[in-house]
Length: 285
Image (tube, rainbow, N blue to C red):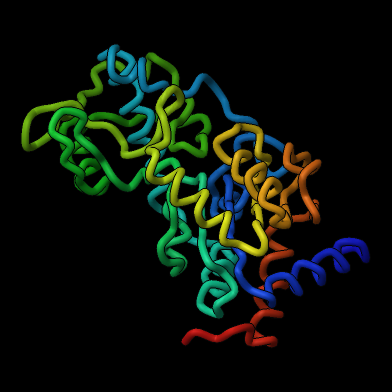
């Protein structure tokens, strides 16, 4: 780290030591776990057109294409492991520095690292929901069923997106069979918020409440391009809560930030975590 970044990290470290920090994390936090970012120098831009809720629910052919691609993509998402950034966040929480964690990610890596009570704004790919009866089930169970229903499916993904979707030639999708809900034979969907779908109001309200109770809102790995995350930065500014951002490249939150650190999260966060251990913060356990 250069001198400017070292000084910025020291300033952020002092804010963490004061406690009452709320984390807002984005796709950039998971790139070191092998899950690509949506845009910017921390990863490649998303390839292809994302699935929308309207298309998924109304077009059986598009739904079949999606499940074939997602079936391949889950091999990367499901096998991903928390990186040093996720572990640092969990460590800060154990030390009492954090009052909440809000994530835009759908990979479940915060919880896998040991973080508690994470608000998953956009849901989690590890869960499946039936759109007819509302039953929720584990993604692992669905993967076993899809594998059994498609014994000859041997397509190879060209690239993967953070939402678990992949790029795949339509010719490789021929014959892929989709399975239905075990309970009601209804339509299954990943328990995530698609484009065109609204984030559940209770999650938004919980997130706003966390932000409003914070001393510092710390944004990790998000360019804040979409309002889904940027609205929490705007709320923090309105409430007089300081904002710190650690992200590679341009962030639309920069005009509102009290501190902007343009540096690799895989370098900055472990350094902060080590400092936290030395300081002890307000130990909870």
